[in-house]
Length: 327
Ligand SMILES: Nc1ncnc2c1ncn2[C@@H]1O[C@H](COP(=O)(O)OP(=O)(O)OP(=O)(O)O)[C@@H](O)[C@H]1O
Ligand SMILES: [Mg+2]
Image 1: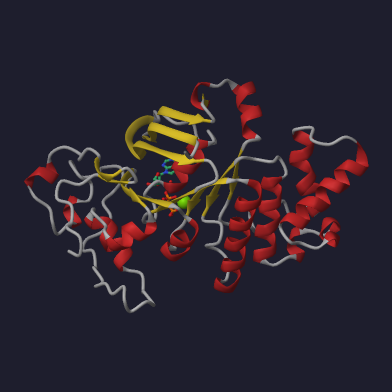
Image 2: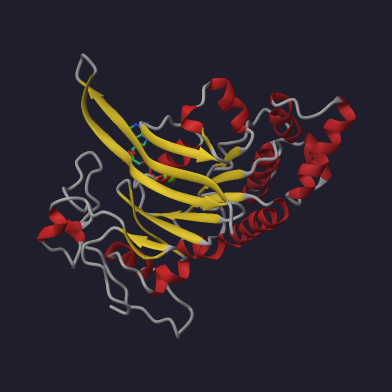
């Protein structure tokens, strides 16, 4: 039996939008809406969806870098949403995040040695100079960077190398779980594969668990055991990548995945072009948020938001008119 590391229950994040001279709340964005899922230890959950659908907000809420409005995040059996600042500080060691932009996330005035030593110092993870140096070399080795990187500055490295340094910094505290927020989107295609492969090797060697956020569905398919599809704050379908390609139930999933060119002629698919823009997250349509763009929409879809239906233990979706296989 696989062991659950992270369980998210009915997570909600609402950003109030203030306006006017009194700074009153004039509107709100429900960036994450009633989201629930689990991730097993050592596995990767991919998270996909159009820009602005709430992926980053969800990822950051899991670490409480953004304070969730309601709901629970249970990590290793402990509800971290109920923790005070002290308990949370200890918890941060176990949960790390890697960002999209390796240029912006490294302090240009610090050497790589000091960047990597910072988390070790904060969490008091070494004794004496020798142990510090040994640990820094170990970290560089884990991300396949040369030893002489320690005295250099971020600008002396390429994008892919900087992302490796960001990964090493996340690894410094020996985390169990890492949110990877589009970690390869800013890199050249040739470098993307190297960084993704590095993340997968590290997962195998260190038993890491990932939430992997990405725009590129091919990358997500490659790295993830399960993929969650988000639309305007809600997870509307969740299954293995292969299942989402071959047997999508939600029309939005089908449209999203049909946009990927498939090199394998045995897996032919017709490209579905969605009509209309993504609705404003401040004022999403009633019922299923996707209904104004959906070709299967009926009256029911305009009423209440659909509840979760399960096709199997590992495949569930929220849709009143799910697609038939091959439809
Ligand atoms: N601090 C904030 N205040 C108000 N609204 C916010 C804030 N942060 C995010 N939002 C809104 O929440 C929604 C979700 O944003 P988020 O950045 O999580 O999307 P995303 O899926 O990560 O997008 P992208 O793919 O572009 O990174 C958007 O409508 C965004 O405008
Ligand atoms: Mg984002």
